[in-house]
Image 1 (cartoon, rainbow, N blue to C red):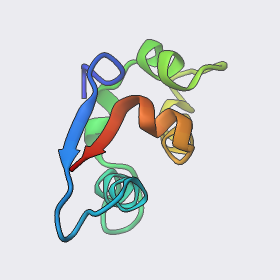
Image 2: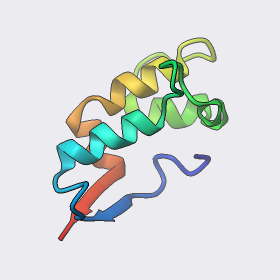
Image 3: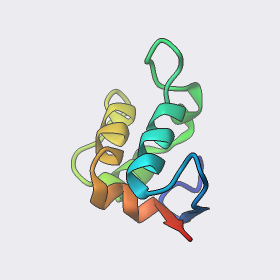
Image 4: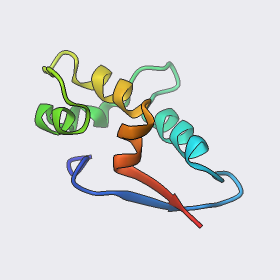
Length: 85
């Protein structure tokens, strides 16, 4: 998580993940606990990383919310994740 925004995560198509929409759904699902709250690892992402990825005014109180909101947008998600054949 510390390298978020500095790396591009590339995934191969599989039977469970056949397109970027499905990949995004799975990634966003993995960033949440069973109760829907964000996973603890997201606390490790710095304010600067979130600002670099999603832009705007970010602070310690809204960084996780803004990161998840940003990842819901295709243009932001596609900066970080890619699916290939």
